[in-house]
Structure formats: structure tokens, C-alpha cells
Amino acid sequence: MNNETLARYALNEVIALTGSRKSNVGLDPTFRDSQEYKNMSPKERAKVDQRVDKVWAFNKLLGSVSDAPQPPFNAGPVDDHSLNEWVRILRYNYQMSKRGVANCSQCAGLAYISIQDQLEGQRRSDRPNVDIVKLAPPGDHLFVVIGEKWPTEKREFEIGPNRRRQTYCVYPRKFAGTESGAGWSEDAWIVDPWIHVACRAREYPIQWYKAMIKWNRWRRQIYTDVTAAVNELGTWVPASSWRFVVTRYHKLSLTFPTEGARFSV
Image (tube, rainbow, N blue to C red; front, top):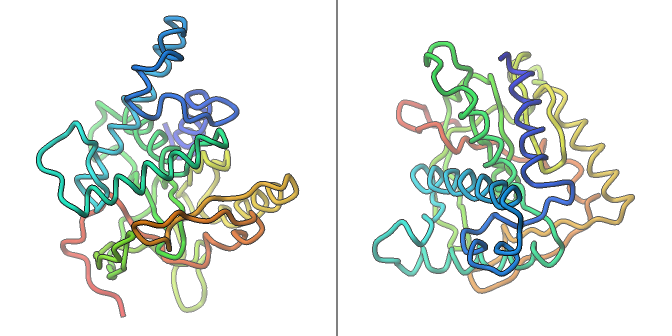
């Protein structure tokens, strides 16, 4: 598969897994204990099981390469920071479930795992680079990129409600590039199931802009808690206020190690 085919495959896979209304059903392992799950047909249950396995494979991956907490069933003593993170995540999921939507990290996670499943068995030298990209605070969004060169620069950012300083490799800030800096590769593709888009990286800002304008026309709001403290809830903001989010903030790699990269100035 080339980059475009992989991107479109991942987008269709996530849409099929989450359904047209992007329901949160099946994104929490405890859902398997609910009466709603027990009342499902075997086919519906198999679909939910697939979603749970993929989402928690993604969460396990994030827990190993970033500050994201591990799922509670993975393990040992829970420190105050991890506990606070879980409280924050539970509150977030509660806010999402009330509106029947899934968040961008869940959508990006499903896309990433779907792509890795598709590439399984191929020689590493034949595989395109696949990464999960996070917008630096106060940006609050994740998407997947296929075929972009691995970043060579790194920066420190304050991440999470405790504002812990962490180092991330960073991609070019501008997708199309400018006279003062290179942009993203011509062959790189972005998958953003949250807005139902698979496109070339350099076309992503305009696709994002169109999605936010459309959502604003539909009076959709976006829930963000990136600036909230540990014991605070986030806020709902109009989609129009997010029109330029993907071009405004640094793009952080969530899977590429920082060793060997140089600090940018």
C-alpha cells in the first residue's frame, strides 16, 4: 500500500469501528460488564471487542513513550500524579459520553493501530514512517501522519494538568513550508478521523479549516481541558475558534524517541 491508500484505509476503518455518530461505546473495557453489552448480538459484541482491543493497545503504547497513564489493570502502585491523570480522563470521557462523541486521541489511536496492523509482516525498510502527532499546548489535538521524515529537532514543553516539563521531537510548524523553513514532505499523508479527513499533509490546514467552518455552521462545540488544572473541568468552545489550531502550534511526535535529536533554538 502507498501512503494515500494506507491513509484512506485507516480513515474508513475508524469510521466503521466508531460508527457514524462516533459513539463512545466500546472505548472503555468496563463496558463489557454493562447490560447494554450483554444485550448485543454476537456480531455487535465482536465489533465492540475489536474497538476495545485497539484502543487499549494504543493507550499502552502511549504509556510507554509519553506521560500518559497506563490502564489501571496494567499494574503496580498508582502514584498521585497517575491517579490525578485518571480522574481527569474519567471526567473527560464523562463529558464526551453525554454528547455521544469520541475524542481525537481515541480516533487517532484507532487509526494508528489499524495502520500498524496493515503493515505487519512487511520488512522495516519497506514500511513508511507512521507517527501520532500532538499539538503543543495550548493546542489540544492529535492526528496520524504517514510517510513524513522523522523529526531531528526537539523542544521542552509543559504538558498535562501538573505542567510537567517534557521533551518531544518536533515536526516543521508550517505544513507547506516558508522561505525561512522547510515544510512537510510532498508524499506525507495525514489521517484525522475526528474530522473524517485523509489528505496530503500540505493540504491538511485547509481541510481542517473547512471542517471547523462546517461544524460552526452546525453549532458544534469542542470540549478542551488542556489548560485545566487537575481538579478542574475543561470548557466547551465554538468550533470557529479552532480554525487555525493546526497551523498555530508546534507539532510533537508521540512515538519517535528524543535521543539523538538536537535542541532547537
